[in-house]
Image (cartoon, rainbow over all chains, first blue to last red; front, side):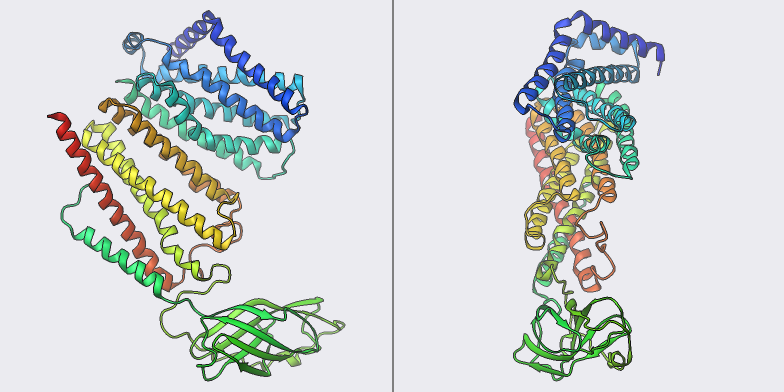
Length: 218
Length: 350
């Protein structure tokens, strides 16, 4: 793995994103609209709904955004990349980019949720660690699935079919951790869940790094 | 993995027939379904009417009964009178004085005869102590709790909530074991495909995975029916159920993925990587998360595990063969799929 190349691909992704402002704006508008819709239909969002809703909004906004990470470029471009970078560099850069992008969406959602209703988090450290690990896991799954759907003739519906069941274990852990962090539940052994989430993340990351070179060669 | 010959298919059928016939016809051991009254005062003389299950009170020569307080103290029945094979009335003189100080004492009913052996109903009588100012043991010893009979013949254990559904162990639990073995075989072929690029491995991997998914769905169905009779609902919030449902969703997505593409090479490569990824996602779901959380299943949240009293030797006589039979039958089914796919491939190539 070459860190400079990773950085290069990362910057390239970022600049493509900012050149196509409509895509970026579209994702954030999606998040904002959904939050507003929820605020108008619930009127008052209690902590239980709050924790569930932020993750569901993140999931669908993120799904829309990450789909294109491997679909937006042409086959010829990939052939060109193939001569330039090792597959690990490419996937790590894409993963980092998707991770930061999902974090961005997450902050926007939190911001709008805070604006329209409230911010009920009591244990901020736990919430931040849980969210970071969870978003990382989600971005690993999304990146991997987007590779699969891209190598399968750019089938975007396949993405949501494959990604949603795969993120469920991560999401279930995440819901529990955030429920504890807003004091909906009390659980003295929540550290175990955080470690478990970390373990799931690392297993999925390892699997992706192992499998991507074989997939990419096609 | 294609094993030559037909002996393993034949033995799979024979073993499974043995499991079905033996597992469904062997009676359960005797037990107590109901007893009246449920509570009494100390010093009372009570007559309990007890309803047995699979009992032979009339045919048995001598029925004996005890109320047990703990491992040391018990009282013997004054009079035992069988009215039918399954109904019996037992008279106890409950002593005024208990060798304990708690206000309410749970007593365990034990009945023993030479045909059914000894069987118990825990907490069948709650005795309220009228005088707990002092404790005395004299009336509680010499209960002659010894020379218990053994039940005749091979019988499955009687469990109070499970009753006859204990036989489902051979199907529900064995299906999960067999499913995992088949998934591991499928995983092995997926890895082999990615390493060698031999298309035959893809056919084998997908066939084993498909049969394993079928087993998983059967496992969910048998579990759901079992839950209806023991937990009184088809679906609960129990972690194991829900994690398994998630696992099944992940593998159903695998089927969708295989159906989505028409390009053989791409489909093989993509589905092999997805199945490896899915299997790795499955490990925390099925093995780790349920261990951390309470579950209604045996072995979780203070419930007894497989082994100990629950999986006693008579159950083992059918449980292990059932796993073997299901693996063999599953491999047979997978082999049929493999041969079908190979033929399709041959015709496609022409």
